[in-house]
Image 1 (cartoon, rainbow, N blue to C red):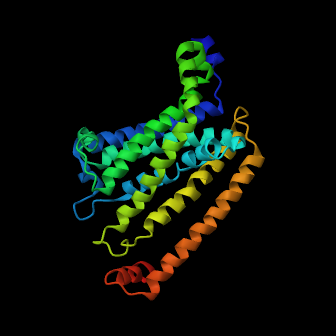
Image 2: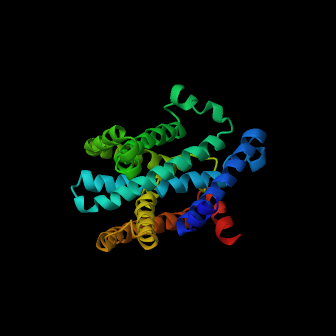
Image 3: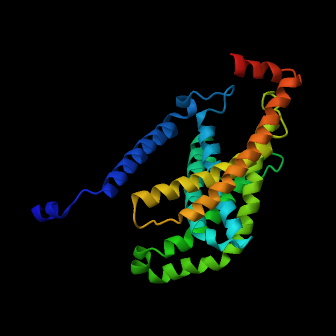
Length: 289
């Protein structure tokens, strides 16, 4: 026992792993409480069916948009130099969409019926379309990240045959990029359309929300990829990053942000010089209190 104690050396990895385990434990406890007591513990009601949880869903999906953008740039536009960054974006996308799916399982109130949307189709519902696209795109992300897991030393040492099969999925990358691009555009824009068709909330009832949601995802996804790549390269020598690639990607993010702000400016201006019952009053309440 004393020999084992002498061998153990506390490193930064153990600190990060311990902090992550603590956060996961708190999340697991909170999830069990929701499963046992229901959504009443979240103060969500029929009058206020969406709370902060829907913000987590939307933000995790939007911030994972770098996966489909960079994969499309690499495999469809032929920008192979961005492939290392695309791998990082794909892994971030897998984490983000996994978070969204887990949060939605809690948010629906009856997680045992999660499969209803996959079996009982409602093509007239935007939320059903979002559910189907998110589920399918999560499958695409699992396939896109399969070669990353297959290239790990642990997988190649323990399961060499499985590692080779996972690496062989890389040949499907162009087809997965096309599928991911289509599915992402569909559900990113449909998330905005969900708000846009809610006429009961006049402040949201605008047809341009689909464009704004899509533009914000184009900005947010690559931005998170740049941040994670920079942090990983600073914290670990095993995650080198090409600063030139990040610089080129940051140029794209900057121009995409300009486009988003342009649309956002006209969206806000249009609400000020036109009068719509309920919407104008809602805008005054938000801006003036």
